[in-house]
Structure formats: structure tokens, C-alpha cells
Amino acid sequence: MTSPASVGKKVKSVSYGKWGYIFITPFFIVFGLFSLVPLIWTFYNSFFENYMVGLQHIGPKFVGLQNYIKVFTESDLGKYLWNTVLIWIMGFIPQLIISLLLASLFTDMRLRLKTGFFKTVFYMPNLIMAASLSMLFYVMFTDTGPVNVLLQSMGFEPVRFLSIPGTTRGLIAFMNFIMWFGNTTILLMAGIMGIDPALIESAQIDGAKPFQVFRKITLPLIRPILVYVIITSMIGGLQLFDVPQILTVGEGSPDRTAMTLVMFLNRHLYSKNYGMAGAVSVIMFILTGILSLIVYRTMARKDGKEDKHGGKKKK
Image 1 (spheres, rainbow, N blue to C red):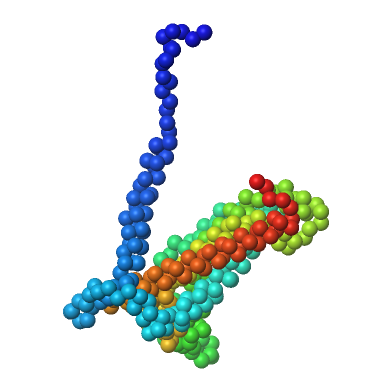
Image 2 (cartoon, rainbow, N blue to C red):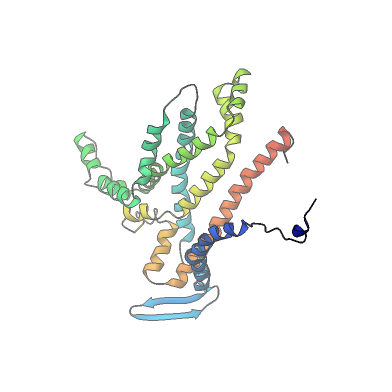
């Protein structure tokens, strides 16, 4: 029986929902101040003529889409985009293949390898500043550098590594590979270790060979990690700047074959042509979004096809 004193008495409930909003508020404040506001300001500046001529400041004057037209018609934007994509592919494909092999090797329960030491060694190059590594490679591969001195001592002709498009791009791609393959390996190892061992054991009992297990079980189950790795690597590749900037002394030489999109953007910022810099930034933003969406939808479509033919999707 309910006592008369408790009749009509309201039960005070404790709401914890507000604490969630309190804890996520700092993120939105920082994101708004340092990401959203600069993004909006960049879009705004891209529609204005705003640059310096000597000590004279021109603008800001609204010119509509003229900055975008100039970027596409009066610059080698296509060439710089091709340079950027080519250098990224040259570094990323070996990075992904070797990282997959290493991740499969170190997560193989039959080998029982101690991965702590190897994780540290693989990830260590990622801690080195790109500027330091670029300067090291610049000194090593100049015409009078240690590499050419070694070649001459062995009886070979010196090679002008930084004057040949292929070797210059190759050095940039190799440096990106060194810095990032450890990070990719650790991410893929985490994805493989999340697979239920019973699935692999069942396949092995049924007579599946290691490559079949890798292709039929491991790769499909780590697809979300692969999508993340590809998209983040692609975004980083499109933003490639410090390595080629230092290695080619800001010129993208030889003949601008190592000039990337961000190096092209930096030239407009250095000359204080903020309108053109804003237009290039917006183009890069849209391009990155489109490519990321294509990669995501392509990988998701493959996943959907496998679910459709392999069985019903779980709801």
C-alpha cells in the first residue's frame, strides 16, 4: 500500500544526457574556430581579387568566378594534379602491399612472433619530421653527394638524381613510403587481429591454403580498415608539400615535374594573391571530397555484392 504522504510526490530523475553535450562541446568549439571558420573564409576569398603589386595592395574586389577561370585556363593545374596523383600512387601501392604482407605475417598464430619490437621499429620513421628526412635525402642525392661519391668509387658514372623526373619523383615516393608504411601496417594488424580465429581455423580444417584464407576471409573482413587507409592516404597524398618542397628547393624541378598542388597553392600564398589561393584551395577541397566518395562507394558496392551473392545481410 502507498502511504498518503507519498501520494502526489514527484520522483526526481537524474538526467545524464547533458554531460554528453558538455564533454563534446570543446570539440565543436575548436572545430568551429580552427576549421569551419577558415573554410568559410577561404570560400569567401576565392570570389575576390586580392593581391599585392610591390607595396601596393589591390582589392579586395569582387570578381565572381574569374579566379577559378584563371586557375583552369592560365595555369598548369592538370600537370600539377597529375604529378601529385602519380607520386602518391608510386608510394602508396608498395606501401599497401608490403603492409598487408607484414600484417599477415605478424598476426599468424602459428609463427608466434613477438610484435612489440617490430611495431616500434616500423612506426619509428613516422616520428621523424618530413623536413629532416627531405634534407637528408637532398644532401645524399645531390650531384656531389655521398651516393654519387660512392658510385664513382665503384667505377660508375655519377647520376644527377635531382635532375631526372623519374628519380626525383621516385625519391619523394620512397620517403613517403618510409614514413607511413609502419602506420599502415599497425592499422592492418589491428584489423586482422579483430577477425574471429574460429573462421580461419575452420577454413584451414577444410583444406584452404594460406593464400586462399587471406583472399577469401582476411581481405573481405578488413575492408573497413582498408577503406580508411586508402582514403586517409589519398587525402595526405593530395596535400603533399614538405617533402617535394625541400627536396626540389621549392621549384618542383626538373621542369616542374615534382610540383604538387599544395606547392602551387603555396606560391599564391607567398605572393599574397589570396583570391587565387582561395580558388585553388576550394578546387582541392572539392576534388578530395569527390575522390574520397568514389573510393568509399566503390568499396561499399563490393561489400554489398558479396552480401548479395554470399547470403542475406544481417539486420
